[in-house]
Image 1: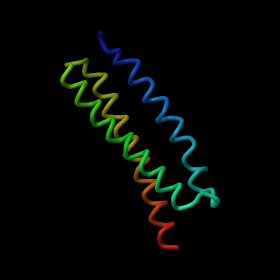
Image 2: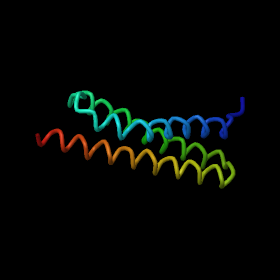
Image 3: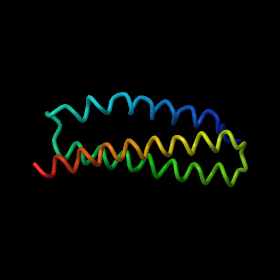
Length: 95
């Protein structure tokens, strides 16, 4: 069975967009505990690692360069989200 790479990337893109939109309000909410933010960090890290794996799969499958570029961009988005969450986590640990 062939993998629908375009659908896979679209799903990952939608998740990244929803996460990016929700993140500022979520992180600014003081009711979230350190444990919750640590869990969020773990989830975002997992998403970033999954994008690394997906990029490798795309490369091995020799898919079109435009799809590989999309995967590269999504990896950057997840890394950026991870940095924002890491910053908040560090801030919470200091206080």
